Image (cartoon, rainbow, N blue to C red; front, side, top):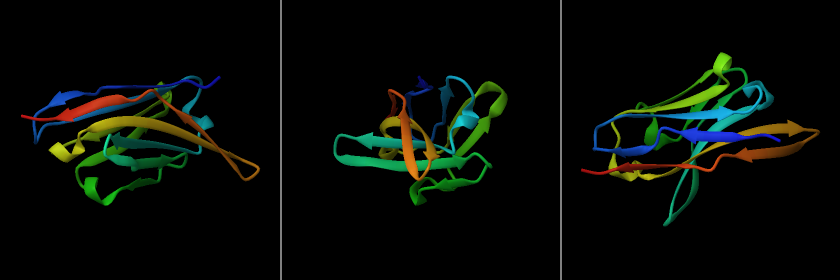
Length: 119
């Protein structure tokens, strides 16, 4: 059984920073890709940032230059450093771990953590 747990969400003022953590049971290397998604009641879940097993990263355009995804293999944790936060970053953030086996993708999700950017 794979468990993913997010933490680090909260309330922050515009321009502030938060760091989200995604901890996985076992080794983080089990996943080919670990990603952060976010969702609001009015929008579909969207990919925010991802990091591959090899360390390659990818970001959605709206967060480039503000967010950084990283991993600490020793702690089996992936982080999302969020700087210069805007009100439109308000959402529930979900961590996703994906593995690929014989052409089939297996997704594992955490329960989500709320990020609210408001003055």
